[in-house]
Image (cartoon, rainbow, N blue to C red; front, side, top):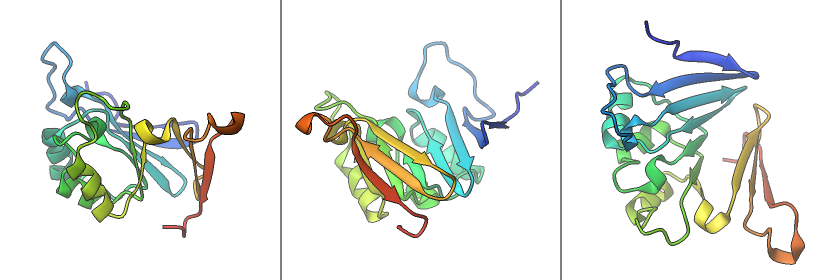
Length: 168
């Protein structure tokens, strides 16, 4: 019996897009074993992609499961093995958040991914450059805060960006 792929939680609608239906665990965890969730709250959506790579992106595209999203957690830390042109065209994110360590040994995010996000006019937030990135929504507007300036002048909160539905 398959678990439900859609459910409600705290006023949000959550849909499980991956692992794909034909998923079989190979034992040791791999990037493509990641859970991919689409969250909707009001008129706004988030796509949380874990570490998925091209094969899972292609699988979701083949199933027509990738409508445009407002906020994309960029797959696999912006690795060259993910965030394909087709994936970004389908998702058309307004905001892209890349969770990545400062000067990491993998060289993430890859320059090609950053360029593709720019070509798609996504506002890019990176944890290696911006610190903690928090994106909230009331279902209409977005509120983005970064930890970039926390150390300056003893601030207790980050830089805030209030973006309305017509801001992008």
